[in-house]
Amino acid sequence: MDVVTFGEIMGLMVAHPGDPLRHAHDFRRGIAGAEATVAIGLSRLGYRTGWFGRLGDDPFGHAALEVLRASGVDVSRVELDADAPTGLLVRDAHAVRRISVQYYRSGSAASLMRPAELDPTYIAGARLLHVTGITPALSQSCLDTVRAAIELAHEHGVVVSFDPNLRLRLWSAERAAAVLGELVVGADIVLTSDEEALVVTGQSDRSSAAKWLLDRGTRVVVVKAGAAGAWAADGVDEWAVPAFPAVVVDPVGAGDAFDTGFLSGWLDGAPVADCLARGAAAGSLAVQSVGDVDGLPYPADLAAVLAADVEVDR
Image 1 (tube, one colour):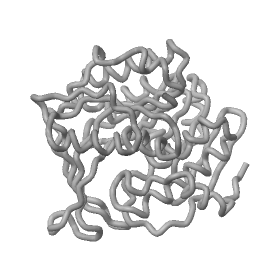
Image 2 (cartoon, one colour):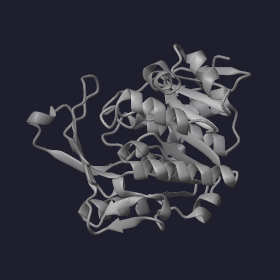
Image 3 (cartoon, one colour):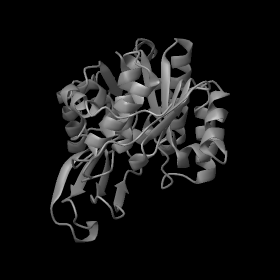
Image 4 (spheres, helix red, strand yellow):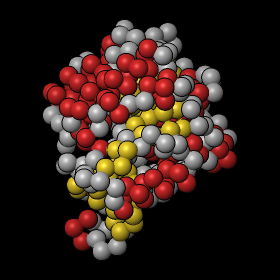
């Protein structure tokens, strides 16, 4: 595998764009999960990816497997649970106004993941392990699993990318800061936002947060800023790219799409500036479609946007 990742996948029901959730009648079915989005996105771009985790042995769980398989993602290490359900996420989709989200994930199969389910050879055989801060927020056993997976990656020289993906509906800011501040130490690539970086590091500004991470072993810190573009630093150089133009239909999943683009560049050995441009391009494409994965680009899509030749500030 080029990339292995794991975490939670939920069934997704998205209201017709523009319809507030409380008044919505028509919904589109899909899947939601930050790590799965990255696995699907990188597979579309031609990389060998694998996703593992626990799903309910139910229609939403089997639908998730079908989407992953159809996208070329390896699911050979997935566990199906006959006693616990696949979680469900129901939301609306708006370009500007606040999006309403309802989760039905308590006691889900994903929350029961434990370290004993990890396959060390599967992780050791990957070039990169991608993890997020969502999985450790689900339960203590999930936190233990993330810790064990990162340790295995370090033992076998596998690059670790970490996206805090802060979800304050899952835990308090204080608990998130303590756990994510622990897990992020030693991650080779940190893909974050300004808000997340401040929570994780406790620093007061972007540069200080980046220094905090770089001093603890991170090789490159990437800050995603949405319509304001993206920024990165490696302790020697800094880079910034503007966002690509986009008509936003559904902003959910833009950050994970960015991760997909950036990591594709990293896997290719591209300069950080080019990785940033790929991330920004992938994010701009993702927000123009409804759902978490539908707008993830294929190589020709990404190339067409990158042909716009976005200027990089150094």
